[in-house]
Image (cartoon, rainbow, N blue to C red; front, top):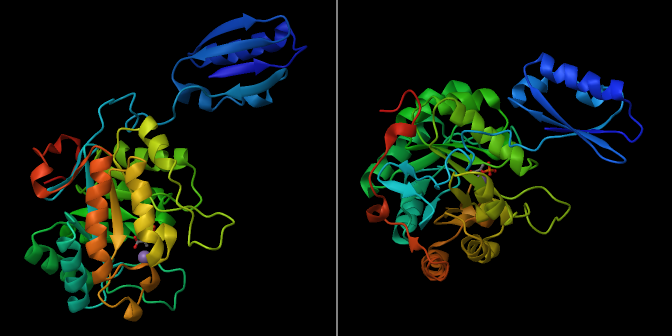
Length: 356
Ligand code: PEP
Ligand code: MN
């Protein structure tokens, strides 16, 4: 941390800063320029967090220079991490396709959507049993019976699945069925939920809050990591902007920015960002081009009858094109498309306390 003193600040002002910092166990290096004095602080940042240095007389600014996240930082682990989901993996060498229905509506619709996902090369299925809806009158998901449907389809197709958990009270139930837990955009800063999913012994897909900065998102991942579970995948799903032509604005820069900060894999959700079927494939090209480690896509056998997010769901026809798009763009980006064979050995060392 650096404390910048105001031009004209006195020696007493500087001494007050130095005394406060050394008083909590830190060290100070004072650099006196012709016009301005700068005090460099060395020590554990948490020591200084309680000091109201901004309010000290003569202080112009307090600038943090080190990162506030530790466990997910690539300072702590420079090698990109691999997250294992059942028999699949999400890693920096490959492009992983995660696909399935937005919501589990019926056994047939879920099975059909997941078959389309599998045929397009998905190694992980998706589907919501507990849906976080803006309106209390909208379909809220089938809950536990939805989980049962997902479990059956996943078992029959031999592919793991990710599903959302919306409240800490449901974490144990959802973790019993799911191979990966999803924390949705509306819950990114539900800190109690982050702690509970961290302890559930399952990998976590953490969506970016729709108004969250990249740092806030990475800090949310740090909450999960803090429980001992480093099996976290970041998911950029679009942020709120002034633009009404798309459901959200896909922040493609989030991929290289997040990769420059953390070792966690990052995937893109082109369905919830674009919000329109016709945008999904172009956004997938952008995602792979910018270096995403995977994409997560909504599929529906009959989108016109979907109870949730029909306009953004890919159809059977789109899925064939999806497969060739992912293959071509992954190759162009120097990556392989993930298959169960690209997983490599499972390392459970970074899992939470309840890992099996
Ligand atoms: C979803 O993936 O089904 C979902 C609700 O996504 P988000 O949290 O990004 O809106
Ligand atoms: Mn949705």
